[in-house]
Image (tube, rainbow, N blue to C red):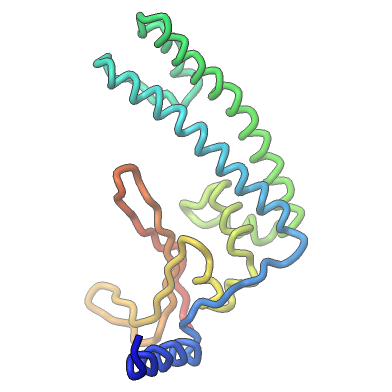
Length: 207
C-alpha cells in the first residue's frame, strides 16, 4: 500500500473509531463464561446429530428408495427405518446412525434443562424477558443471553462485535414514511445448506 493510500486508509479507520461505528473487542464478564462454553458445546452436539440425520436422508436418496413420509428428526417417526434397506451392511450403517441419534437425544435434552436452570440463576429477568418476545424460544433466548449478554445491549458497536451479528445505522423506512432519527438494526445471519443465507432482524433501537 502506497503512502497516499495509507493516509486515506488511516483516515477512514480513525473516522470509524471516532464515530463509534467500528466494532471493538469485548471482554466477556466473569461468572457466566463456563455456562456460555457449555452452551457452545450443546451446539456442537446438535450439529453432530443433524449430520447423522442428514446421512440417513442422503443414503435413502442414494439408493433410490421412497422418501420418508414424516420428519425423522422425531423419535416416533424413526420406527422401522432400517428395515427398508435390504443389504445387511447398509442396514447396519443406518442402525448405527439411529443408535447415535437415540443416544444424543437425551443428552441434549438434559443439557438444555441444565442450561435453563443456570440461566434463571444468572439472570432470570433477562431470560424471561427474551422468552416474552414472539419467535424467541428457549434455545434462542439462551444464545442471546450468554453470547450477547445484557451489558452489551446499551452500546451498539459492542453488540455488533458478536459473531453473526450485523450492525448498521441509518434512516428506517416504514411504508411510505421514513423515520429520520438514526437507528441501530441488529441482525442474525443464518447459513443454509447449499450456501444460501438469510438475515433476520432481532432488534431495532433508536440511538
